[in-house]
Image (tube, rainbow, N blue to C red):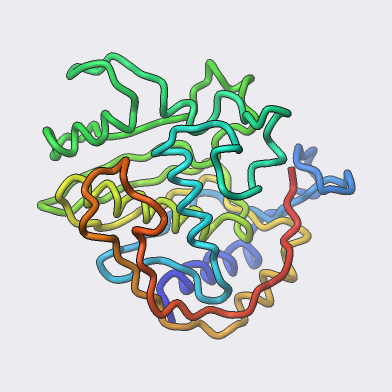
Length: 276
């Protein structure tokens, strides 16, 4: 069984067997037909993925890893907040007529600040510190900017990264306030594992451990049966994932620089309803 599958199954069982239902609460999300989207939730999930052992691609069903990495490049490399710069439709529901999601995600990473070593944005600050002060305990980003929340199409779900170097290995903690388990769990894990790999290679380091901290991990009511079927499937061996070794500049990486081999996975689960 792949380690990513084992973690996913354990998370789902914890939520289904011990989680709390929000059916008695006043909830914000709605389904496409306008009815309230309730969840079963659990608080304070911490998952660990060692990239030196395995790249965490789910095998119970296929994850569209190319689209996931394209999105993380849209946010962290292009630092864009416009869906016209993205090669998928996943953000369409949160964009305005011009394609903007407001002052969210990539917008926040493009804002420049006065750091002690110069004026730059958060991404460039991380890259600078990994090169010049790799053992600092202050290498981090945060896009949950309270001053701009009212102008965001969606308040950030995954909102902060903390990087830490041990020897020649780069590790990271991803903090996420909320996660739709079926639609987004492995998607986010793949994205930030890929980001960790790119930052490591651009800094002359090895990618190590990604620790994923989720405050509110939930399964939507219309996803329960899909989840139950999914976690009953047979797991397959994890694929081999590596980066093109010739790219050492973070801003030059593309989706095509990720080489994924032997990715076996279960059958598609069909269209997943998304609550907005």
